[in-house]
Image 1: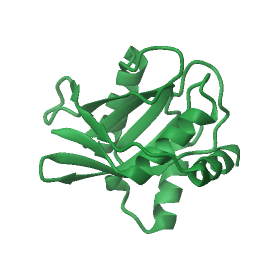
Image 2 (image 1 turned 30 degrees about the vertical axis):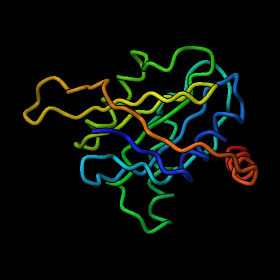
Image 3 (image 1 turned 30 degrees about the horizontal axis):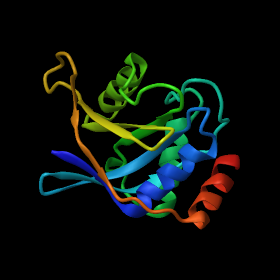
Image 4 (image 1 turned 90 degrees about the horizontal axis):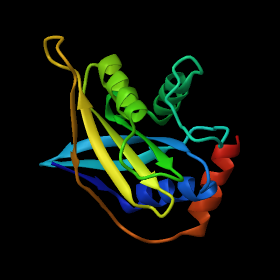
Length: 167
């Protein structure tokens, strides 16, 4: 199994990372399974205060409410939005303990698998997955999710992402 990111989704992720390369920024993604590949084909970037050294998924702040509102406005299905991602501005792209805990919480809350994606300031991605245990045991976490993506640059996408993040 691998994570394949479409060109459009990858351009949006890169633009979010480049918005403030010294801080961590967060995003959500739609993931569909096609054959033996997890296809990340769409990205939602929440308005956020960029800064600091972490980008946690904050349920109390309303991150999931915002995500569900956006998904419903698009006429999409919430179960397709299984990717939680963020940048690591000044550290390796391997997931931190907090990253793994956040992804496990997301998988547990939704009772399905979820994918985490960390992208470095120079756009190197690391993907991993989590799934709730089917009978209530320890969650299953895998750090072996190769990431495939296209490279390209579109200034219009960077401008659109910047406007969204400032909203």
